[in-house]
Amino acid sequence: MRLGRREPRARATRPGSGVERPPNPAADWAAAQVAGVRDDPLRRTALLARTYHGPEGRAPQHLPFRRAAMSFMRWQARRGVLNSLTAQPPGSRWWRAVNDRLLRDGCEAMAHSGGMPGEPSSPAVVLWSAFIHHPTARNWYRAHNASIVAGYLDNRELAERESMPERFFLNVALLRVLYTHALVAAPKLALGRLAVLGRLLGDPRLGMAGVFLSLGRVLPDRYPPAAELHAYLAHEHRLGRMLDYGVIQPRLQLLYEWSACELGLPGLCDLVRDGNPTYAWSYEDRDVWTPPAGPLPRLLGRITAPRP
Image (cartoon, rainbow, N blue to C red; front, side, top):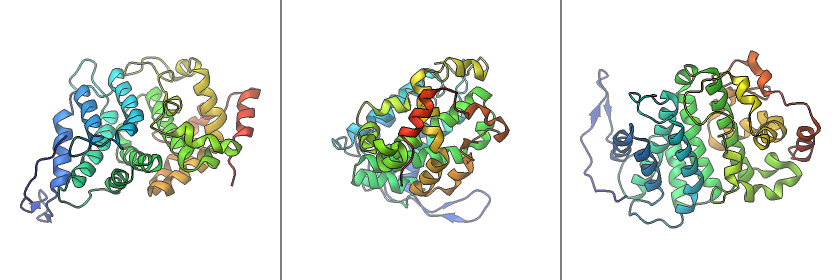
């Protein structure tokens, strides 16, 4: 994706406020890129891929990091959550909004790296710029998760409109992506005495990260879900269930608190209570997060218990 040079525009005025807004060509360009693909899931996917090629179309150090992002993006497209709102069936307003945020932040950071002027429009853009200049697994997770968490925090009202099974899934998606970040950046928190394996398992450039981000067996492959939540829970993939309840759930409160600090987003702590996810989810319905009885979840919990 080659960026055309633009001259700084005249100062804009916020409608009805009379307050001038400094011109921000990079942010405006990014917003235009996202607007141009908003109703086409395939073009959304292509735009995400192009952000890893850099402003000149060649960024070999960044390309390996797109593996995990592209895998999840393609799954969203296949499931239909990114469909146009006028499609049959329509997409999800929540998923589209969060995806917009991820695309917009990445495009803006790329525009800055190509020399386009303007102040970063959000802290996540700053983190994406840090990744562009120093592409490491930890920097990728910080940028990616800052965009995702900001999307969650900004779109709680849309999340509340989703069905109960979908709202459960939104929480699972969040805790999984936070956990994979911790594998790389806080392996003792993520795996306890097995911490030495964390960076290998969580590296977004490697296929193992896909195991932790695999969500296709939690909900059906099409949106919106048609069955009741407990019907999906009964068919959840055994490996995924062991991961969620045996490994992640016992450290969930610590994970959210660590992530809030790592990302500079204290609002993330409002999405968990006593180790139970509460994003668009009632604390009174926390029974779905109770680990299943059995020796294997308990064994996994002991082996991977967080260590200082």
